[in-house]
Length: 170
View (cartoon, one colour):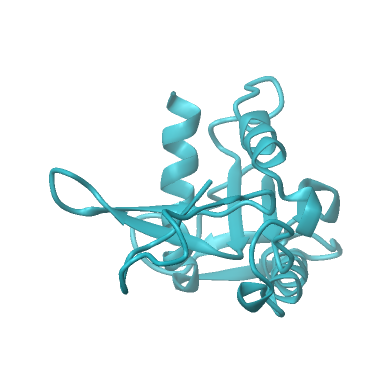
């Protein structure tokens, strides 16, 4: 549970990544992420960096008109940026593209980060998803969002659903 909370916090931290600048190490190709201001300024924050990058253009079980064209390219660009600008070792980045990005494979890849023999509390874990998503209203108010894996199926209540009715994807 602790690892999942850390993963959620790390995912939320994606928005704040612009506050940090990579510092180039002397005579070393690795980059170290060092905060430029705040209480952690000039201190090394992470021991190791890992990423799970998911990109889905093709959803075989969904209609052709909602297939995507640039999600995989976005995922590949994110990989290159993490390596070149933020010091992520290429062998620490797991890619799930199109048919590889099934619900089972995504669940397994996320679960791998719970292995405390491999991943530690001072490691950075970055998760990126480029593909379809869905937001649903909760019975008690508010909304909850979901990422849509490549093997999703449409559970429509019929072709003649009233306008504005969402199809549920799972």
